[in-house]
Length: 308
Image (cartoon, rainbow, N blue to C red):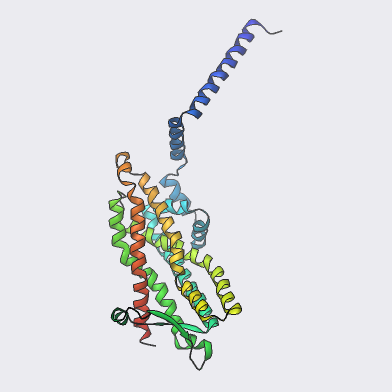
């Protein structure tokens, strides 16, 4: 048998539960409350710079960075926000990029060797005088060593160097434009930060390129084995040389996400005015890079081929 006081306490508890439920229902129906709660939760979950530096100091090698590129790029973006970590991340990103592009050159060279065709370049001056001429065409390999001729006379090394060095050099040429576009978008970055994000973008692209290569090799081998159509084989080989452009889309998306995080740190009165420049920033820099890259690779490839 409950006393009068116990009954009153029970009623008070039940009424409090009802009030809490009503408040909860109100918050679920109020979008402004939800937005505020999400913003507060995001701030609380965002790691501090001290936590990020401590996590990095525990030991992160190049393979860990590759795993982050594949699984959790948000950690990379957090690392790049710490100025003291940028100098140590730059050579690692550059190493990942070079390894990926060198492997790409080796695989493309093997595919060209199996098909028995090798690309022949025409000078840009010749193409300007006669636009109907092809800047690049695939001709049968003619060598006393057979299909292994390009491996003996150094054409394979030339192809690998042209792509590996050309892709990195293009980023260096386009860095001033990226810095200028970031200022237009209101994202204040130092030149070192711009370089770090650009090299990170190349690292992401190289990892994506390595992931695409097995699919391309299967397509190329299918074209060689099941079809003797020279036009189909030429189209397949042209596709192989344009794979860096396709893989570059992953790097572009990664750059946009990184710049979006930086834009969140802007003052609120500037966010609504300039954050819409981010889309234009990334598109403009991508167009600039896409225009410069083939010219850079072609120029390096053509000039070095004169010594072979």
